[in-house]
Image (tube, rainbow, N blue to C red; front, side, top):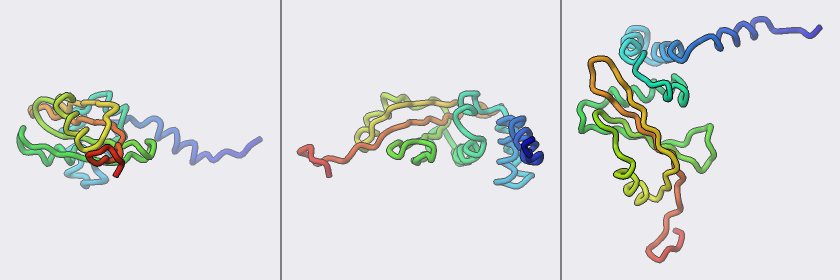
Length: 155
């Protein structure tokens, strides 16, 4: 009969039983301490849509809500450009954080193309906090394209 690591099995079962919301609470308390973490959890517990929680880990939500917390008005904008570890090496992500209406991809695309990127996917996520304006996290997944000079030669 094979030997089983009972502690490991129990640990895995406990992790599997935890919800994304449980993970968010733990990640907030770890980052901000119990008092501030629980206050933020109360505001954001039900704010993220199901699509967001399927696409991102709770610890990513902590980073995203930090960006949202920095916004002070509908004219403010926060941005994040990064290479996700789980993606192919040539894939980058660009997130835009704002209040109010989402930014239209048709408005954003020319600017991103001018920066030398080819957008392959867009996902807007609304963040609804009770009694506060709707916030948006807009994710663009893209491939950087090589910069070219005015004659079309790769630089």
